[in-house]
Image 1 (cartoon, rainbow, N blue to C red):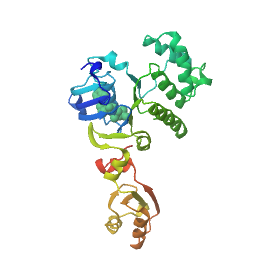
Image 2: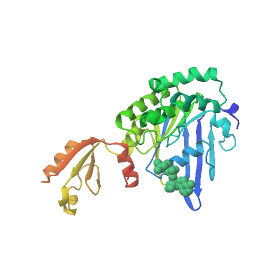
Image 3: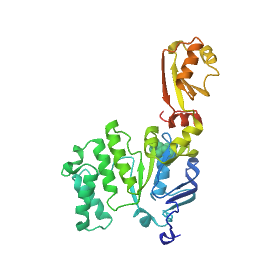
Image 4: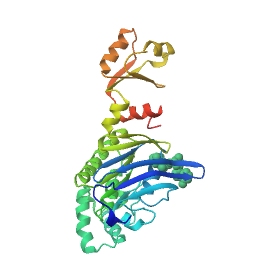
Length: 315
Ligand SMILES: Nc1ncnc2c1ncn2[C@@H]1O[C@H](COP(=O)(O)OP(=O)(O)OP(=O)(O)O)[C@@H](O)[C@H]1O
């Protein structure tokens, strides 16, 4: 299919039985998904789940071993340059040119796309403004914080006005404030109609950023839906977390039986899933049990992942 046959409303990314093997090892195990134009789509899974591998196949920098993949109606392996013209790629590690100043990083990158200086100079200024780096324009890369480097990497990837951004673990290594600034910039792009594909192992990032996501583990899709749908399907509304210190025993686990909808016994605490966490704690107290610590919180995508795999997202 050529891009001229690509119709709006068609998925901008379409994967069918997408597979990547390294020798006998299956990194991506026959996954299917569609990403709609303007959507913010997430790949949520722990380290090694196959997220980056999937992104690199979409970006056309890694050959697939099997299945079908189309990006804006084109096969990235057949029409690499045409596909890449639609994409802004933000890799897991910033790969800024340390030899160049902040503004030069954007302009020189634009030259790779054959864009003229008359376009690049004003566009670089716009992008520096967008990335809140105008006052850092003449700084060396080594003088930027981690959050600033990430914003510059994103600004640089926007030079050719891509309609799709591939973001691999965009906020790993950033402090909470820097993450929020970055999320804010990504929301703005989404408002402008840019399609976002985001890999993350942070459940709060997936909840904040993604309209829809796939939960991946060991190269396979475990579940698909909006964060709210997934939480509704796989967890109850609230969770009571109780800790019993070093004295916890099977006897305590047995005594808790039947409280809430479901329970997860973790090495350091017991999670009680219930419509009301406070009511669950009352029930614990009514059975004569006194946890060392307890808290009630809303269920999250971390709970969804735990339910689906029996493991935590972050090991
Ligand atoms: N070139 C390679 N040769 C062999 N195995 C590889 C290669 N690249 C990746 N893998 C393996 O494929 C699996 C998926 O890796 P991938 O980088 O896609 O995971 P991920 O979900 O992105 O996790 P992370 O966030 O840690 O990068 C891992 O087990 C990884 O060790």
